[in-house]
Image (cartoon, rainbow, N blue to C red; front, top):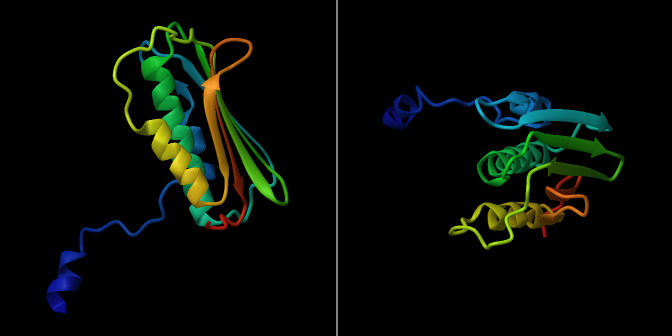
Length: 145
């Protein structure tokens, strides 16, 4: 028992990032597109699981835009909450690669699974006006399926 307690001395028990931490994604990385974050609506008292999922979905979307959106100058992250659900949209203004690109990873698959596990929906694809859009809708309580 004492060994277990001592082994956890260096462990960080702080809660993971959530919606309130999305501002960390804002700004401009060297040579990359500018990232703007906008939060609106009812975002207080979200389930911690939903807040963490929103942060991770936004983080992965911004990372993908920085890596894959050709000639992108801007990435817009928007989170809007109402009494029932929270919508995350991440849009970039880059050129969509229609040549098939290199090997795909599991980022989009993982994001889709994360949203579905919480009873939400997920879509990612080219935007009608150009660029790429990621959109997730999650129930506020994160009702598991």
